[in-house]
Image (cartoon, rainbow, N blue to C red; front, side, top):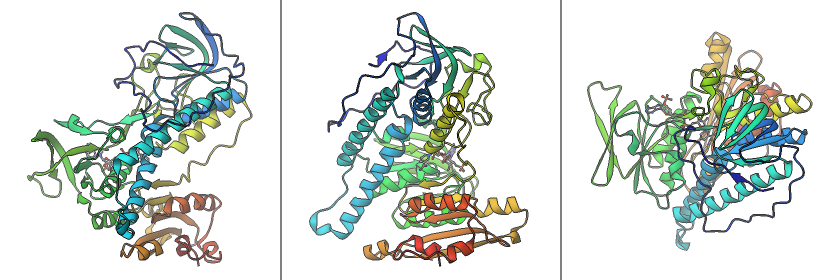
Length: 494
Ligand code: NDP
């Protein structure tokens, strides 16, 4: 089975389609076997054909749903105009995590092994990242073929609740899934277009000497941390009074200290109102909200805006069909991921829900099971573990202290345990950097309501602890579980 490109329509989205990366290291593309018969109608240019499910978008949610639905015997066509794998593979989790590894190893090398010439090298890191992304693109495509999903290249437009047009092709679909993901929110101030987005970072062949990062959320913090470890002078400009506003306040404060100690210059309470260009530099002007009437400016070789992501739902024809949207602009769906139009479903970043890859994947699989197989067990979206891959990393699951107090109604119903310590990793590196653990507990029962960690091991620890929290773990269980020594995790136990 081959992929086919159809003529893009001028109607979908405003972004230029992005191409799979060109890589200097040849990706290990395995042989794509001949697909088994899919049952999806044969392609006939300009003619209509049928499918049980048309999935628009080949990212985490779309691929998960398409493969699972095909495994249940549904005739599935997946439409994608760009590289298969979506944001996570191409412009998000995977390339970011690899850059972060590169930065950490470079820091260890230059700190401990300076005599061997260890140093950070962005150019080399990007080659490695691109090779891995290309490998994943090929792997995703191959697995879709093997599952019997037909891939159609081009821009899709939903022309009726049961009809999708891609170029000059019309597909009659019993159901349609919108899994088109999200894109960086543009900075809406004069000169805002001078700021790069997180997508652009992965195309940089070299790093600027200095970058002004705007935004104190996941991406702003991660990129500030990664870039500074690649030797870039970083100013992090944050609208609010702390980093990571949706995380526990003590973790946000601890991370601010940690980033500052590692050389990132923090500007809190900073309302960016103007970007301008002069002598090859970008000037980011902001008003300090705690000092009315004043203006400050940061000059850097480049600016990077990371101020949230907006759902890719424009230009698909959804408004015309009466699909309802939520407050954040994503498609409004019910618990079955059904939009306000009966045959149209949506998962992942295209909806107003949590913008996390594993959430999209779980939603896509569950939907395919419900529509074409046995009703599967729904993933638990009350305890979604999450991580920020900064240095040090953050991991969290469950409620923050503030959320727990709001939920319980009175502060005295909630107790917290906070520990600060220097990990063996940092002792070996000769640095005084502290790790922080925080447990949020029901004061009476000792039930653990939230775990918040700042340490490079945090993401791995939090993934495992998410199971314990779902099962109702109490502080006493942690205290009577034998610790594994020497680990970072043992600080939570005993
Ligand atoms: P976030 O929502 O995490 O953070 C946006 C930040 O930008 C906030 O600090 C916000 O401030 C600030 N902001 C909003 N508008 C402006 C403005 N006009 N000027 C200045 N600052 C502004 O968005 P990100 O872009 O960082 O990430 C998008 C999503 O992608 C995340 O929510 C997350 O779900 C996902 N993601 C997950 C990752 C992971 O799992 N490790 C990694 C990367 C992304 P305030 O808080 O004060 O509103």
